[in-house]
Image 1 (cartoon, rainbow over the protein chains, first blue to last red):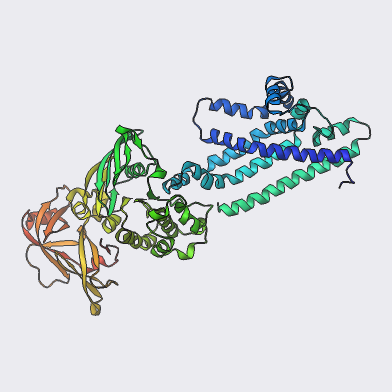
Image 2 (cartoon, chains in turn orange, red; image 1 turned 45 degrees about the vertical axis):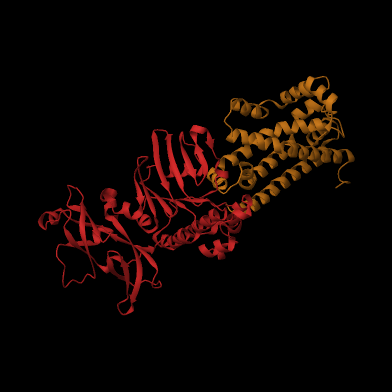
Length: 231
Length: 365
């Protein structure tokens, strides 16, 4: 495969996989928390949180990318603060691509997890409580196992979305080979240069293969979990 | 261990305003659906939070709204067997059973796994998933799961309601053993007279969110206005008897009660066993003279203590037979023509085959 793809193309594929994986894993705890808040929480500002989370789904990706640039750019207040205090830089780094992908994929992850939380029979949680389980233990031993299919679905959706994210990423962190040039950016670049079609086609095939593998993998996993929780 | 409940709780337009106490044994909260039984049970378990009231279990205050005390459900150590079992679908039967032990200190244990499995006969189910169990099996596992959490009180909310008669008959003996052998106080929610008759030590009758009557099962079941409408067919008094002997030649057993000796279809239990007998009011015939030459085998002398009022054809009559209370249903015409009046000595006649299906004979606490 290494010989089949040029080193540049290979770099883009690996970078995309890394960005999508890291984005998915980092957004998981936040996604779980927000899904829990939206599904179960009763607090002022819940509708606002709901809207905010879903915003990247409806905004043009370029707008999201530009807003990220305005917030997390080197000269922007938040970006500057993070760089000065913690040495975390997003602008024009692969970490920025992770942030852009994570935010673009976040609504999909939250939606999937939230639906599964809403489907949980709360009477089972009550039963666990009468058996002496503290609410935190109820979450870990009852709620979490029951929403596992939703979490897996959310992660797969998030991964797939992150893999294909283009607009926000290119606007926020540009298209730097080896740093921020993900699979979609690489395909886009190849379609812009003479004789790039063959390379673009190779990357398209790789993208299709990865996406299908993710789908099949999630299906198998979902079936196994389904069987395990006996639903 | 004593349980003391006094709460006022509003839920929409429904007001639950109930007070009762239990000193152990099995207390049935009896009433129709919508009378507030489950709300009351949930308040005891800590699954709802009453607006006003006090709930005390032994020396633990579970709720005292005046002092702002509300012990959350997971710290009450009250086992709850729900009508729909609510087993955890993602855990095996074994893990369902031991779930509660993960959160209890060992020295508080009321029973170990082997005992519970033996008591409930669920050893062969341990590696199964709840989805593969029958309704009766599920309910038994649910009871075992509640027991394994070492509760100080066991709540059972119509645990038999979703089961057919055969499954009910399969589980009732387990609940009797729970009451008689394990010794945890039980609060049992039910609207089935047969279950009250079979299981109750104490009965608390709820109507529209209020306790209209409470007391010893024998007393409450023998009160005249206990049963209304369709339930009158189920009316009947309870006798605590002892198995005095068998007459295998006739396939009969002899029960001894203060009221007298009763012949019932052969019981497969050893002589000396306590047996609680329900005598349905409609199965009791009254005679004003000692009857002679009857096929009915059970004749109990007594005295009329109360006569119910009704405009219909059937009247409930309460008798005292040497301290045992019986109820008989007779026609209003018989009351007038015999005549039957309070204080008159009578003979209660009960056919042995009234007890043929065995469902009215349980073990006695």
